[in-house]
Length: 211
Image (cartoon, rainbow, N blue to C red; front, side, top):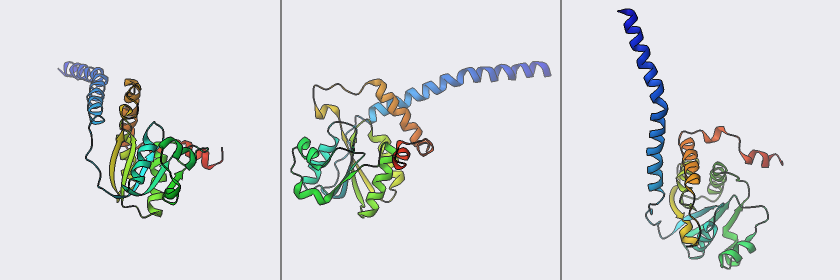
């Protein structure tokens, strides 16, 4: 009897071990389906005026949307986080089609961030310095969930209002983000939700060291 019970337990454990990878795949797939639906939803519009707006660079239309929001009076200050070292207000004005001369004192070009985690760190420092209590977040729709998790963790006392920029809004003829890109982004999102993003090495460390 004892030998039979032991064998039964072993078989049950073996079945569980064999089923575990399948369950993980099914759970990931179900979550990915939710993610695809979530990034297609249009969030409620932000308030008519907030303290600040942050544009996370890395995709078409993000900076332009944030600049126009500032120029139209929708925000008091603008941070462009993760901007390249050679970019300046003149180049941004040319690309966005907005005269930034009267707005220059309200715009900060953040050159520290080289990742979404770095964006959050840079934004938190800027928000503290400028006493930002309400903030519009501009980034790509597929990047918004991960960006919001990082920003909420870094800015727990600041009200965040997402303003996602979709590729179709920038260029109707541009290709949509690939399924592979969105799958990779969802996997990164899961790591951020699990609180693991700060554990990994970041390019900001190399920049700070002058590498």
